[in-house]
Image 1 (spheres, helix red, strand yellow):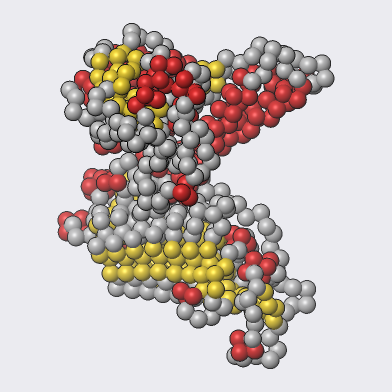
Image 2 (image 1 turned 90 degrees about the horizontal axis):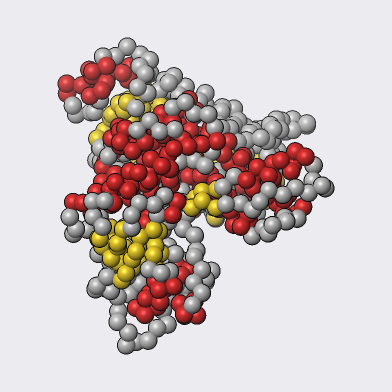
Length: 638
């Protein structure tokens, strides 16, 4: 779920796959057989595009994509081996604008809970969505849309090729109401012939449609701009349904007792909005999206595996079904934890360091670890004669050999170290030379980059370059971490200080974070002196105008402590400093004033902001906070 569900591509109709008949095997234990029977007996629905076999002329003519390496890096479309004299497809017209992008969360809640579901129970949600969509489709029976079809209908698979969909401009004819699980529309190629792939053969498109009996899943079709208001209403209805099944609906909803289903949907809408506006830090949001995507994929895998089982499944097939089923159950449990509002208020950022502290060495001495490809005497000339040394050409090995009190000295070069995510002992890691020359990059396959749980860790004169990891570039889980004269180039959130942990950053630079440059969780402590925090909140959301995070973000239940002196916070997409307060007030401040917010430069709220900052134990002296997109300082209620 890395993309906005309101615009994910390609979309397809909701499918219901019937499992094979229940079978048991005398060699399988009773409890295992019951679990397998349950997994086989439960139809699994999904909203992912599924390939439909094409068996006629179109199947014989499917196109072969060239290797990506043969195409120029800047190519936006694949180059196909097709006749030169064929009719070239025109570019696709723009799709209807997404009205849901501009909706506030309360408007989304009103739309789904009051207009669409109208108090429905979980087991009636499909029928409610079907009824809502059918009513909208009555407005107009013919309209133009872009059919975003599965690429497998047109192309032979090629590992290095990446085509999210094949888009064809079609004329749509709506059939009478059907159940949502099999909503189909009649489609024919519209004039002028248009596609996102300029040189796709027109006759191949005609052949594919003929094989499909000119029928396509309704949710794969997107109305185009330039039509009347009725078509725009249909476009909104389709978007509402797609978003519901992509993000709000869960397979398990109708299997559990839920007294108020619309209240559950409201919480999921709030979760989505918290992700979009940055209330939930980028790394946590990415992990949630990855978990949800994995859950969906595992459900599809189970569908496909079930569909390949014949009437009499073997013991091995039954066991495999059982394994897949319980993997889905575990992912389901994780998703439910994220959906719990109490966990979301404090951030579902669970400690991940399981490594135990080593403490001091048995003989009580500390060691200085030299990290360099080759060590020379000149490198150690300033060390005292009784210094104990170890030389490593691998930073990971140096960290693995550290005990509390050790010092890791890194010479210019580029390094990676998974053990930076396992800092449990009090060590100092410092570079020798310009910080730009001591580059430590993250390993993209790992979730975490630098994670500290020690009483006192120091990182000095280093460049930390985040690549692919989803957590904050530095996460302080507990204890105290010092960053001194460091450059942090982020991809996820910047520095995260969790509840009860503390952080000191001096003379450092933080840039490029998807969320805030520094995230302070409830009850944390931070001292920021002489730093630059800029160009943060790079994550593009469905509603960037509502995104507030920028330089420094504080979550205040209970209040963290922050001291900022001589920092330069600038050119961030949100506010320079944002103070996130839950709607339940925990300190005495006039509610009306809080709801108005308090931004620097707003003179009538200056006293309010001063009072809140005193209550929160926020001390700010001689900071330059300027050129931030949303403003300098803001209290955000949620």
